[in-house]
Length: 125
Image 1 (cartoon, rainbow, N blue to C red):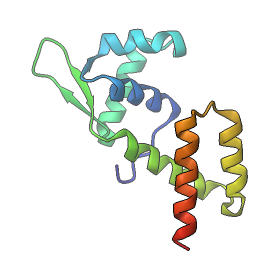
Image 2 (image 1 turned 90 degrees about the vertical axis):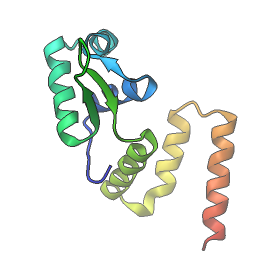
Image 3 (image 1 turned 120 degrees about the vertical axis):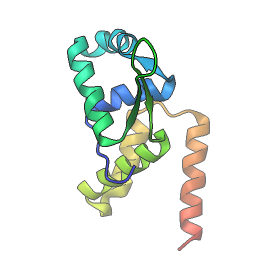
Image 4 (image 1 turned 180 degrees about the horizontal axis):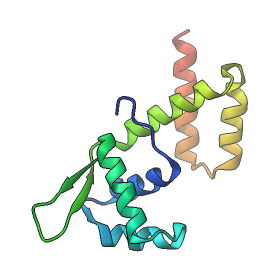
């Protein structure tokens, strides 16, 4: 996903495609409508933009276009995290982790994973 930056709306579409693909335009419009109110035209424009960025593929071989992700969710999240960290001060990483832990409902497994990651980072010093 080299250099691909996703807008908030593009993230919403990509999450739908990561959850289930391929998907047709109509199904994506239905899924997006409650959250965004976007019309078919708006979703179509967003999908074209994602295709131009190289984030989604378009299969035009059937009766309707089908869209699938070309980038992996993990890679997109990793790139977004790096971009976010560059925007904020790195000396406040504790504040970032603390905010994430307090503002999201972390499962026990997610907490254990964070602890493991931090312990591994400490060993690498």
